[in-house]
Length: 394
Ligand SMILES: [Zn+2]
Ligand SMILES: [Zn+2]
Image (cartoon, rainbow, N blue to C red; front, side):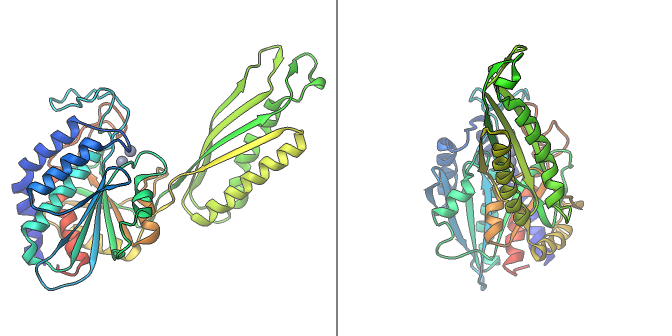
């Protein structure tokens, strides 16, 4: 087993300069969600230069293809990278900083794409040493609803065959290069957006009996929403509802407004509880409307589901990562309340989504986020090695 891992590690090191120059190109020309046109054609040109066949045009600018191992073996494993950048003006001062003003690869998706290209290159160079098939997926629009993952699935990337496992990785500032981590089981939360409007009757603030103040109704609702979760969530599943906006349309010291808008987020680690809370929120709004004789409109925008790391596949990940040269620390991570559209794959295929240490820096989604690029060798080699492990070649 160790020979193949040694070779992945060694060759990933050899490839590193080429991969870093690919990463710089991707980093210099970031594109927003579902606008990844140049990114897609650049990836296509790299794949073509290596003689790797692929199909493009999924969910806009997504690409996918299948590598065939040359040794005996069967099975299909999928590897995924996301492609989009964020509306942030880069302030890293790097000489390969973003040239697309106001857009930055601040979530490391340039690193994810580079590592997937690296894994593809390694698997192709070493194809006589493994059997089975590896499907690679470059997916647009991770940062924006409805999520490129859900669209690529709807467009049939797995129609001919479901992979036995899908693997994704995410950069992790705060973890050193040589450290990887994974949270087995429920790993990331679902994320739904709440938009509530309450229409009462405005009026003179000195004559409240002639008005129907929507602020009073809205305040009650915020309290009741906070009481809803503990009442339903008997098993104390990690979950939260945060109201982040409470605005009136008009209103003053002496004016009762007619309309109040509330906005918030609902995060949850269990799909069953998620459904119950959706129902509960609707009931609360209906009850409030009747009680206050107001119009209450709830717009619940369903976002990404919970991300579940398959338990058996997680064990395989831990075992292989510990054996992989170049990895010093393999951490078991706690669940996090952020969300990620890789969750859509995890709902239908056993999934592994792990964190790749990229050194110490400002957090992702900030203008100062940077990456120690030595992590690219580990991210490429580990991904290729995991594919081979799940295909029972190591
Ligand atoms: Zn992000
Ligand atoms: Zn991300």
